[in-house]
Image 1 (cartoon, rainbow, N blue to C red):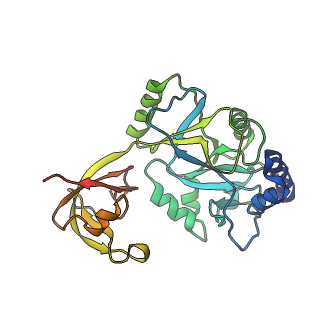
Image 2 (cartoon, rainbow, N blue to C red):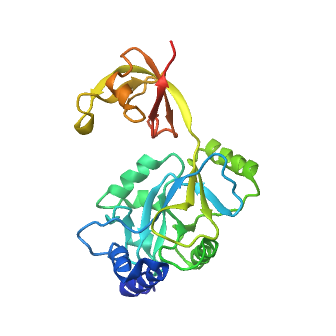
Length: 298
């Protein structure tokens, strides 16, 4: 029989760990307060956030894992919460036997299945069939002391000891050089993955965006026909807000980022062709994170 989660104990452990990292008592209370399971107000949770890695990053000294196309979720010892603090209506059997300590990871349904995953996670009343296919891929222990290599080893031990088959430790590996890193990135992308995550093996946990946590993803480019202009609002009032464009396969979408002020004042005309960059596609074929690059030369 599973013991009832002791949220107060989890809170004290996390509070003490964060305090040891130098946030001070007030900062630690503010950070861990967001982990409370019964809060009506949604506070952003204290998570370590990644920065972009340069193509020339040397993987020596880093632990490398796949970047999962999932929904970031933090387990606080009693409930799953999204990055913004909102609770996730996970079935009790999904979270049963998770450790009585904070975990950070991704709810994941598989490569290329983000939209189906997001639909499952958003439901106020969870669908058992959907959740049986989900996994909780854990990659960090928020507030825990020790270097990342030590925390990763702890996660592996916790996953092995758990009787919960949905709880998985994200596989970490050390790579010898840039060539090995590039080969691994190509393998993941060709298999339908998003990219890689690199975490400094000697890094302490700290909330916020950190240079010790990097994401490495391929950047693609493509061309699109301009169909029309969408007017800007607020700061962009009177200028271009976005281009409505069509790909060669007939997919239409709005392209709204990457423009300079001059390009927004005099945007590419309907009927012209533009080049944009993007990082993968949705299940419907729409480019993700599309950004204007240039007008196509005539």
